[in-house]
Length: 163
Ligand code: GDP
Ligand code: MG
Image (cartoon, rainbow, N blue to C red):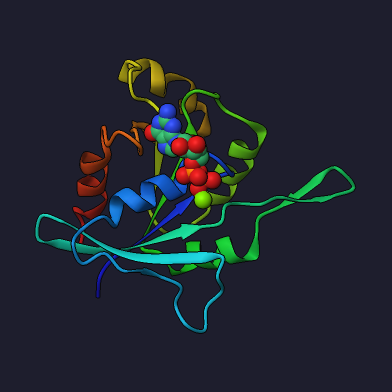
């Protein structure tokens, strides 16, 4: 079985950009799985000899209830459930947002390993990009650039190490 990696995070952090990079292999297959919601996109990728499946979630589109309660989209929680590893993306140019904190709180309870990817970090020093995100308490943040590719291979190789 190929390990499955779920990409999660609030809207606009670069999940789909990272998904496209991770599935750009020659045999990339990006399609909605029949019988599953269109809110999740599945694609295949490979690093070295290791294949993987990646899920691009629509994001934790928040449901606002009385302006207070934010709930994670059910579909995203299903993707998290199906995954062997989770990548939480945040935006290194925006800093930590309340939504990032809510998602991180939920993911800290998950049984799978969670990797914190600080995206849009091209041109930033890795230490500076990571610094603020330690407060999410998901381990050492990984500065990456989904659009430029910086750090992406190292992150995926690390995620796949146990598989
Ligand atoms: P999603 O909503 O999380 O799927 O985010 P998208 O992949 O649609 O990207 C949101 C915006 O961020 C787009 O304008 C992307 O071009 C931009 N973006 C994504 N990755 C990067 C990156 O590594 N660096 C920069 N500077 N912009 C990025
Ligand atoms: Mg997207």
